[in-house]
Length: 404
Image (cartoon, rainbow, N blue to C red; front, side, top):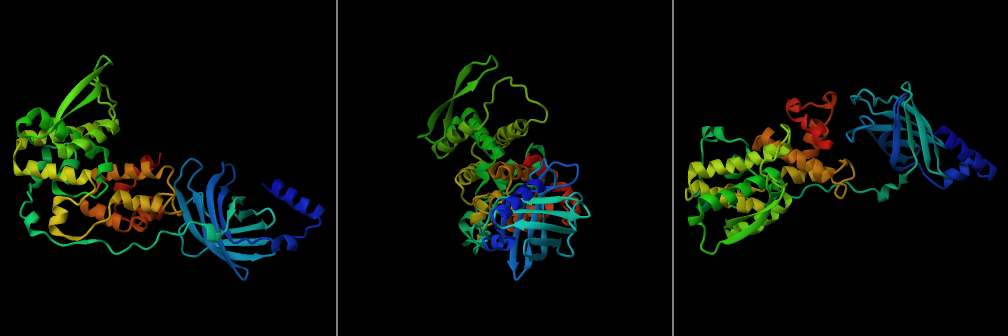
């Protein structure tokens, strides 16, 4: 790093360019996104350094990966000074430092002509290095403040139709998904959940097998291809309510092929997904084909698959609760925010959303969704030393799994 900087400086001197002249052509203010943070005997870590400069005084943030092999990062507020080509940075007081990312006093040099920034922290010996700088006016703006939530008026007619089941009723089911859908505790993004899709498919196929006489007269017949235990394709035909047919066809294309006799590893996510299908089978076996509870599950499957409010949500009215998945994407999706980037935001947030269905109560999901960055990303997702949420031990383990 320092050899490159010396070569740049030497070239400038040979060309008769002084540091003062070079400094006039650029500014230390900006954001380095192609930066690195390297401590002794370690491989470089990713780093983002954002600096503002006012009259020689610096302020900004330094975000460094927790290790060379993870996309999780910690962000510190920094301040310091800049004069000529020299700068210093120190962490603002009162911040807890994560081992391996501590900074005390970074002393370094900024070359305005090449826009190379390099510095060393004392006493750790960690080196910060940046070569790709963006002007602050080109850096993605932070997400705007959330607008006032949509408010739905109560609907007494719908409320009169709501069926409720005691807690003991659900003890024989394998997943929480069937209860969440029946009770209407889901957001507009529930159709992105694998377990919801399997529950949906399980309902359609079981109703076709066990309740065909109760299908509408204008129902349709769909044929899909499956792999049998000999590895060849078989055709399966299902009689499907037209209100469910389009989404069933769409979900079928997205779901892994459920081959007969398929051997699954004990920790395979497909085992949990298929359990949601088992729950649909059990539900219809217990309730029959025409019970009000079956009508309610069907209606919420249709509503959820189309991104609409559940029967219960529309009945009680009030503010529309932000969804857990969309709240996560609003923080981590590069197209929305530049502050936190997951390796694959949709996969990361989708995984968190799926995991949250069995870990969190509806009230907990609403709590984190309402302020996802503050309550989840900057707390639950952080190392234990930076977390203050009492539920950290319960929810944090899914974060590294989903970040892989």
